[in-house]
Length: 77
Image (cartoon, rainbow, N blue to C red; front, top):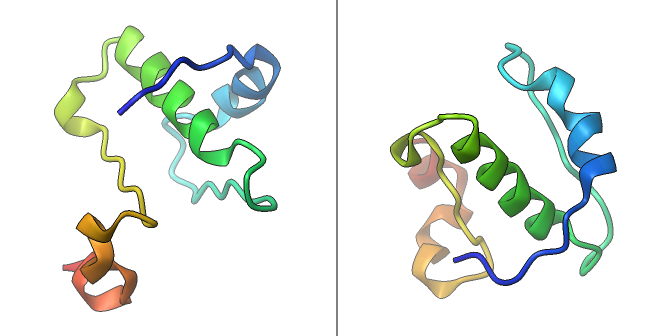
């Protein structure tokens, strides 16, 4: 799942204060700017902080394997 990633400490440090807070977090930006890579870095950071793998969900919504989740109802279910 995780290719070689360049550490983006500044971005992760900006996100860190919101970890564990009961608010919705949105990571937005243009295509191909690194949003998915940043989320993979965040997942790595959570694992290193002791969060179990089964508590971290990652879905590549461009993958045909998750095509059924593109509609809101199957994703919600």
